[in-house]
Image (cartoon, rainbow, N blue to C red):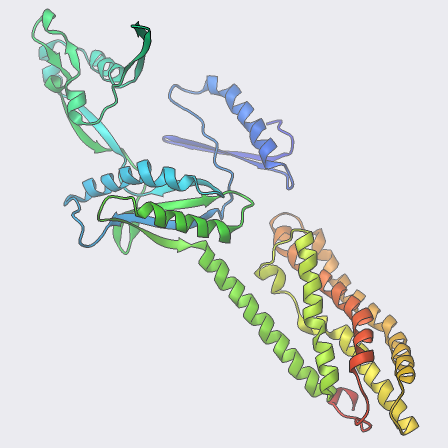
Length: 449
């Protein structure tokens, strides 16, 4: 407690695990917060039980698991017949070769593993043999612990050269532990760990498992660093897995189970399809309502131009273009101002042509367009402003709701502002070059009847 910006503190404790969750105010610098928490952990470490080492979770979010994969044997591979041994070997291979290599992928915060068995050396004392040999249990524990730790022996200088002395007591096989001496031969018959205990390769206790296609398996999860692009990081992780797979033992393969880039790609395709179909429908409706193909195409230009301004604004503000933000764009609202502007242009030009009984000169067309723009500029701008004000209350949302809906409201507001700008500037300029009323002296189109 007492950390700047800390909003909520909660903890969960159960057998073998204690989890502490700190929630900071929105906008807090995550790196500074982690530094402060690390300092507090260092202060509290002295009060923890022996062997309890606090570890801070990686910088990620609840949706940070972007790639799931499994490691297993191919159908024709020579795999251990015993399932427990097979899962233990796969877990060891993953933890020693796959995980370290995958963690080096840019954009990944960590790699988790689910399922399998963690390899352990099991020492099961025989109480009768301990009593017969006269070796206490404490001595057995002390000998195993002392002889499985690396130790330095200093430096020996010979002939002007310095040699580092190091005791490498890493355990590789069960026989390494079984051969540890408990009592030297000079004090009676020599006694080793193997004489008073059964030493074997076993499995550590586990709290869960993973299955693939109904079969127990070893599954890995690549966790993305908070703030990274999930599509790009997913692609890099999958490519890295493919490279790692080429260096695994024969018959062992890595299979991608879930790739976030597939979901992102499907979302992008959905947005693109919706935008294209929406724009096409708007163009067809405009052609039917205006009854003038030049006017319809002129109004339709407001869609890509307004959308380009929207994307420019989002790029400058570093806003995310996603399904929530882009999916809320209504092309009907975007072309609303341009429809009003172009329809009034067309009406004024046709009325002037009918009044004069001849085509208009360039000066006359420019004057009519200027007058027509002045007539509807105010009402059109007011209409767009009213629609924009509808979305303003959304910006007052906070927390999860604010993060979900603020990008949508911001995208709509920027799109409406861009459409108003296009209607007031681009439409009059293009109409002076493109729009003609000759040959349309009779009123046509549903919107002008």
